[in-house]
Image (cartoon, rainbow, N blue to C red; front, side, top):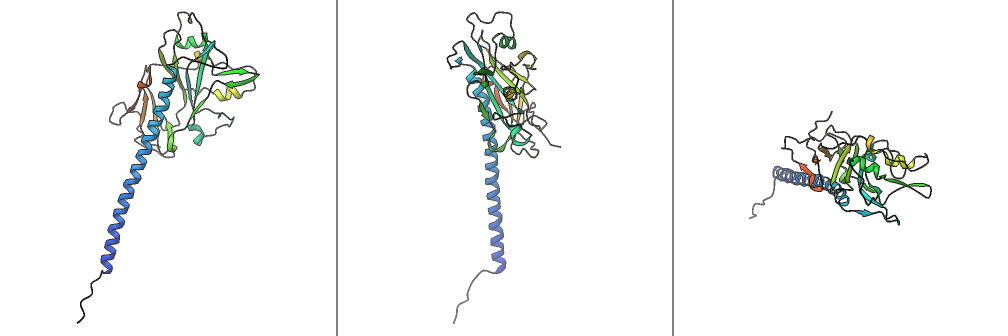
Amino acid sequence: MYGNKKGFTLIEVALFLAVTGALFAAIMGGVQNSIFQQRINDSTQSFMEFLKTAYSETMNVQSLGYGRSNMAIYGKLITFNEEYALDGTRFDGGDNRNRIYMYDVFGDIKEDGIGAPNSVIGALDNLNAHVIREEDGEKVLNGIVETYTPKWGAAIQNSDGQPFSGSLLIIRHPNSGVIYTFYSTTAIPVNGMRLSTVEGAPDIDWNSSGFYSGSNIDFCINPTPESSYPNRPNVRIVAGSRSGSGIELVPESDQEYACEWEGN
């Protein structure tokens, strides 16, 4: 007598493979979503830390070195969407437009201060403040220029989904030591000025550069720059910020959340 042999039917095998495949797809989908969300968080936190660094370095008086003890760094100029790179490459869009530069703003040291009355922007002119100097007949940038590119290919955008453009000025008043934050919708062409063949180190006309204060500055982080992403993290520099504590992440539930975008 032979016993009955037991095995799996084709239907049972097919069902097993189908269930296994569905479970695998679900697990992989969850892993991919988790990785994507983590990259969004990384890009957002990295950008916030970059901005906080500007405040931290502005709060401390620094000398320039180079044996020029009569000058000091008074703050940082951060430009978004400049036309030229440090190496002279002219940007024509794409990833290059997402590169951000942070320059030292340096000026004279005056033992008796800058006099009064003077606005903060006016103080920069009185201190002959620059980001470019002439040395041995060449135009050079002071110190080490910090270049920042968002992590994981993310893009810094405005509320309309366009590349964020403009200039952020974080300045310590030479008399009071108070930190002030200004923004201009104009991206000051620092590298273009440095590369210019016009003789002499160019001066930035701070008064006519369109800097203003008193308003929130909103940055939208898009993890998928080539398409619309409706729930972009909203990084904000709160109006009147005096330190890095004025940089916050605005939740989507906030009525002032500025980064909702449906695309075109």
